[in-house]
Image (cartoon, rainbow, N blue to C red):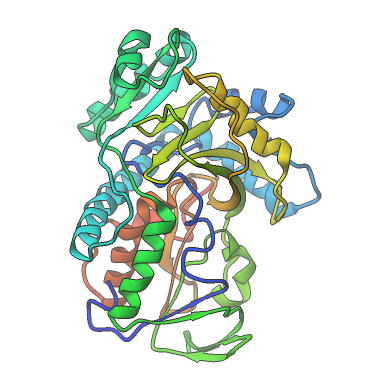
Length: 398
């Protein structure tokens, strides 16, 4: 969007385009994910998981004041229905705008990324668990004008024959779509280069020189970067760049895992999430991906086999024919989690020419284009198409 507006843009990345959390996720473009993790009832659902052995949600205890401060804020936000509704309104606007821009970008630039608008199934093993979402679905319908279709076990089996009989049912969101994220990021990178964006890999930011309330240059391991304006879109790494941004944002890395295999003989057609086991499934043209889990373990870079095993064990309960996958690509990425579920999209404190765009929680892939357009509007001084005030850095998180 910046380049399309006539700007000369250089993209500097610590590794390369899409090599982080954009690479191995399940590729959902999901307007359905409008409510944040921090909402009434969150503690009641999360605490039992934390106490369970081999839980899909875990916190590895450590002496980390930033983590425990984040947790306290999360608890506070989850007890405020008014805050949840503000967050849902903000996310809805960003999700709808992003899906619109995804469809336009992929079509206009002919990016081959397996885009399919098939919707998404939210599947429950037990009918009682399915009932718990009824109120939320009604609220989504009343507040945003869309909702999910409820399917019983037999209807679900007819819609998705790869699933076994006897499941509790599902909620089907027809509004959702999906892409192969690594293919999209590769294609997007080629588009940027073709449009004249300079891409520099292996660049690690070290410090910033600020003068008169403006950033003059950023020092990196590959020399200084000078520009008229700067965008810091560094996801879960953003708190570590406080010297550059002037603020340590309330972002905590939430580690997620995925496994990607060759397509099985009986392969699901629709994207799906097994709600009770916290496993997401996406079938691509060239493979099947299992993803999810949430692990607050700081910036731990290990691929833990027992965590990966939860993905295959969880998925095996739901499919009609399940052969234990062999090999495959194991991956992890850090979700940039905020206490209230809202990203930070705002000018950095005391830095009038630096915009921060980070903290997109579990929907970074789904909200990327909308955020990009918003940042470009902010830097150009245009009226923003979305109320940017809801994404302020200094908003109340307690």
